[in-house]
View 1 (cartoon, helix red, strand yellow):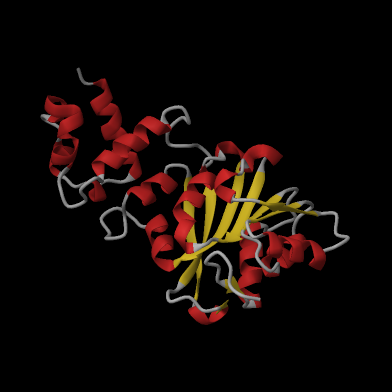
View 2 (cartoon, rainbow, N blue to C red):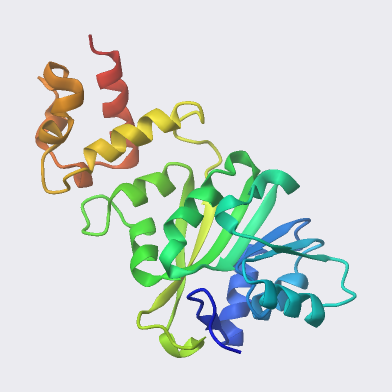
Length: 251
């Protein structure tokens, strides 16, 4: 079968089982699989879920999934684009998948947008993207994507997957990331859009100080704040939130 829609199909059973186990350490009532492809991960997820919704954009692959798992009423195959699918329509869920590299960031945004309905996620990503999700302040990989994810979840890199684990092999390494929602979010959900716009401004020019990046928005309100002389990458998510609130409260 030819590669479709830029997909690299994961074939190594050990890694497939690791994804399923990371997503579902116990039997889950509902799992959403993104990019089910040929059904290799689907097979592992079915043993760990009471209901599995497999989203696949390619109609031919979706038809083959229905054929492969015919008679298993735990599986629902949805033909569609994950970026235009309401992932919250089925209720609280675990999310798993081998994400297409070229749209991994917007897919992550859709997953995080589930908010309290997200129980857990285990996704295979390009290694560089995975490292950005889990990056700590002061490191080269730390940036807006790190802040976006760590605002609501704990990201953990569980394993690395070489190109040989896929068919056809990609030109980059991959990594499995588990996202565990924080028990208590650092900001109320209603506050998060405003904060994320602020964070985007902070990281607009990564090598510039916060004073330079934020001056168009806050001007004189930055005066006297010690953080203004730092770069955004030097502040943790909690410190960025504290700065956001301080600036919001200043006249």
